[in-house]
Length: 84
Image (cartoon, rainbow, N blue to C red):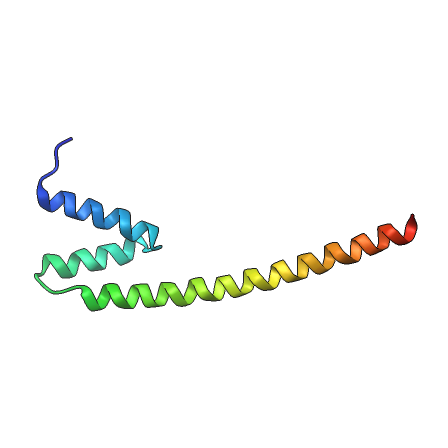
């Protein structure tokens, strides 16, 4: 397929947006704004800020889970040593 410059820019944006966790709805809203000749910078910034907050929260939960799992392994190893 052949894409014009505008289509190539959109495809590049979509690929970047996907890596940042943007939803299809997010991208649709961004494209709607740009198609109306509006700047979407503040919308993009807001989406990134919200995604960052979500990812940070998920990261903290993952760290807590890692701690619990390591404690469980430590307790299990103590039980095994006690039985030997």
